[in-house]
Image 1 (tube, rainbow, N blue to C red):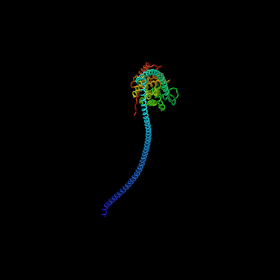
Image 2: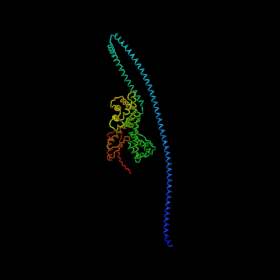
Image 3: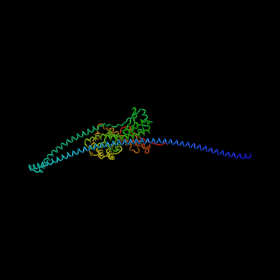
Image 4: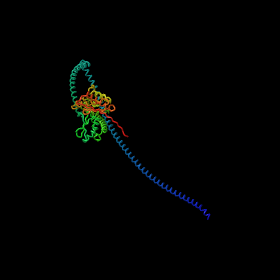
Length: 519
């Protein structure tokens, strides 16, 4: 019994080891089973993904093949169409060449036939000439025998008598022809001028000094004026045009002697009315846009006039100067319309006299080109225009026509004479010019020139029909005290230099701005 008790721990230990070993074996087998199950599921998932990928790849492959086939079909169709068009074009060219070849063959046959006929006629004439020469020699010999004079003596005697008779007849004929030529020349000249005027007849409309801008309602007048008149002052200052807001229903009147400024103000005001936002900053933006539009319009007007006159290949700068003439008047006559009319008249008269029509038109269109910048440069518009034409490499004959159209040079070509005559015809037409308007405009221009001549002046605008001038000075050069002194000096200069009714109000405006951006 004691021995069995001693063996019990050993048995328990063995059994424990055996149980542990069995547990480990069971755990290992269970773990292996689970791992194999996971591997199997992973393999199945991988097979599934691979099968799906293969299916997707196959679908994309079929789609790509279809797209490629469609693209190839389109390319092939386009290529076939281009080939057909080229073949058709080649066939048309071949037909034209064949027709031309046939025409040339027919002409060549006709020429050869005519050459043969001419050769035959030449031979006949040669034979007849020889026969006549023989007959003439026989007659001369017989005459010498009958008259007792040699051929030279008879020729001298006859020539002396003929000379005397011819001198008397020639003198009478010359006198008659001179008289008739003068009469015919005068008559022809009147006919040419009358016909040219009839062909180039156009209504001459003098530019006015006011423009009317319609308003959607009378409430807009208050918005244009702005708080304490800020908006209207800003617009008048930027454009140099006087805004007249009176009892006229739904309308604002723009008054100014400079048509460019007036048109700029009109366009800017119409944009502001359409936009609805009227304040000083917006006014500045719209005035700037209007100025760009005016520049574009000037270029388009120049191109249109050059096209209407039939004058090609003008320098772009000359076209711009031509467009500026739309806003220039001479004694109330629009200079651009006048230049176009001179081109028509000169070209028509040149055609009647077999002169150079293109040269006459070109010189007629450019004869007053100097008036586009005569207020910016010293000297007469004739000299300025000639210098512009030389600068932009115009024909020397055109330059001569410009110099001669007011008699600054003696006309040396018929085209110069025609341009001079066309200029006089256009200017002398009844109602074409108004002296009073030109005098008025010159007075306003002189008023601004006086103001611009002082140092520190940035811009100046004559408004209120010349009864007021507003001067904007550079704030970094002129302070407030100098501004007051400047207004007095300009007033004194105006009193000494100009003659005008009533009084002229001189306003000097000094404005400073500081701009910063919050970031």
